[in-house]
Length: 197
Image (tube, rainbow, N blue to C red; front, side, top):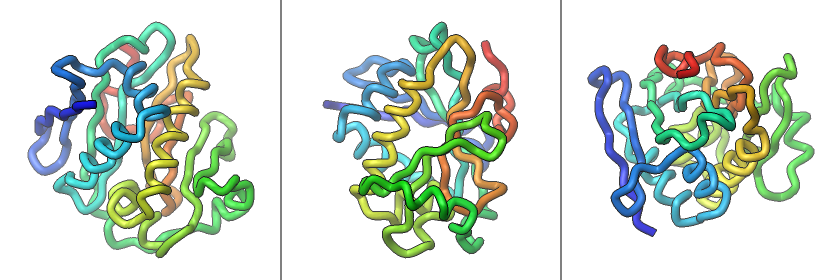
């Protein structure tokens, strides 16, 4: 399958915006999620795209999704987050969840407030690989990166409902990569994605 990305700078050296294309057509949100869940070639493309980002550390944010929005064009932003690049990882807050790993190297669990589902890699290689998304796609084992993206797609497809959900990585609180499927955009930095439109 042939995929390509169109990148634009919303704020030079701060916010990069992406749209993904497949055979000349813009991917919609549903196609993006099904590709994550079921197409290894797409997951590899997506990982390589993120690896090539100019930022040493970044947050990944997407627009809200619901059953009524799932056919909209998929887009995302990378928000430069230099503070992630030099901080120490912090596995302890998620350690009890790591024990539920089924061998894939990825776990899914609810946050403390029970208003978000978190998808996190378990420690399989050097801890530096797990502090944030940029480090993970660049340093973690390729099969673990692939498993995480597959789990993100499967989890989002399962959770899409009439109520909007926000898909992102934040990382300001716990210094261990976790993808968030949130019922609100409470940690979002990209203002246009905070609103359901």
